Image (tube, rainbow, N blue to C red):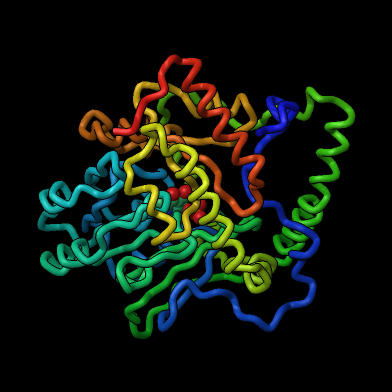
Length: 393
Ligand SMILES: Cc1ncc(COP(=O)(O)O)c(C=O)c1O
């Protein structure tokens, strides 16, 4: 039973908060968690830059072609394009699995690599994809930005690709952090990297202090005025929108290593506990939506294979569902605002469906059960108000 006063008067936090305990004042002896063993790992400010450097290290040259998913966050596409290569899109099915047949048909004479993504924790059939890449002599680039860790069969996610990338800042309360892993060593090749400046380190420190003060500040704001507390600042983007390439990729940041502040956070964090809580939240939402048809049954099992970034629900027929949730203080989002400008949506109806109707809910480690209940209740109340509570197929 949800406390009624919660409704419309509080936000569900969008991301986990940085706390006093997390302050990496004393550098712990523990090493940074490595996404994979037995491979070279390079830490960057964001996954997009890790991907950019990874493609360059593979030696893919301008004029060659890389296959990329039609359903994407534009930052991925922009970082591929910035290496000078050409791109060709392939289809992603509404189940979030890539369309292998479509992918096969799009391989051409100039194709040298395929980028695949484990969308929101939905693990792709890696053996089959690797088989296809071997058949055509293509590099496999595994984008693990949406998984904290996971496996496919007995093998770890990220270990299938010739290179793979991870995005730590999606999972932890840090402002920067992404990794490039090269499971198959490329002898003598290392990415060009600069140390993060002292100014940025200082900036991160101040950011940390502000995060620690945040709960106190929101409590104060709540005391002063209910209205301020309900003033939700997230963007309310309706419909579909193209991204701005200059915002997606900043050449200056591309060369910068992850900050020491963030790396030290990673050394300190309670990784096992975080994985446990995220998986608990995933299972909670799966169970709560068992009686409605909001996702393919297979997504219910995702937590067994991967620790995911966010929980996707598919709501065809309802436009701007995420905005209704945002009005209730729930930081749901879609990818409707991050479509790369080179994509012709008319050629990819499945991607258009996903951009319009796939809504992501937070499942981060700081969510309380009360907040999870509130999200579920809000979703049911919107569905009921629209007069439809669809049954499971
Ligand atoms: C699939 C995928 N790859 C890469 C990225 C880039 O991650 P980052 O923001 O860490 O650069 C994103 C961003 O959301 C993404 O969704």
